[in-house]
Length: 300
Image (cartoon, rainbow, N blue to C red; front, side, top):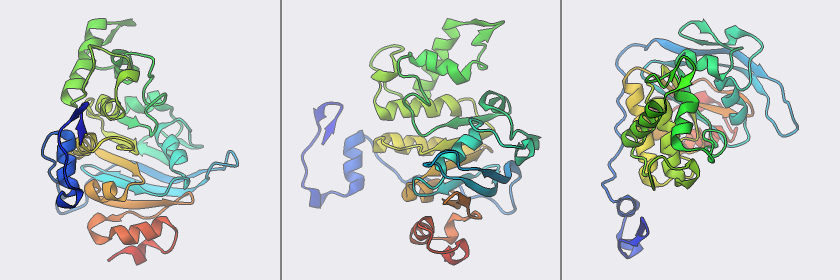
């Protein structure tokens, strides 16, 4: 097992569990994630999509078909699905990179934002992290402080009267790195110098540190190590526990069931009605991701 360029041990695979190997890889105990169950009664709706449709724009894209769903305070809403079933198109609609035909199709705290772009949506307390961290969530040729400024310019008086306060910008980047355990090769390095896991922790932390009202993330732990994945999942659960709504698009069923309070499935551009995670099994959701049966049949 290698950790930070050092051989930390050689073991016989049959005598170690995957959890024990993971702990050797990250150098710390890997405990189970504790998902706080919601109390009695339905939490208030924060983010709502009503009748959202999107035409096929290229031969490779997937049209979205009359999607309606509500994300509630204090929950992680997991959107499961196999790649190519509309995840990219849905994420663009959620973030404002693609704008709906009507403002009323998407609301946050009753504010109609369906036709608003990403910057305007951030003003309503929405944070988001796209699937591709290199070039989309982060500009790899820029420093971490510059990347922090991209979405965090409204925080900590980083920009005053149109002038960037470099000291405040550096402090903000340092706070993100410290709070989210981002391991840096030097002070304020280029984003390209970070490992995939550390860069992912940074771009997720850049959004969560603002304590958004709604946090939307696609494939949050794609291609990262087990330690970074655990850290990111815990951070999302903590944000939900504070009362935010978290919407997570993921192909990883283990991840979906680990932290989601409710689960919906995106298949061929259509979104199923969300169900309580405890009422379904990974096997039934997996079948639904393949289009084999309805959500009613997926319930245990």
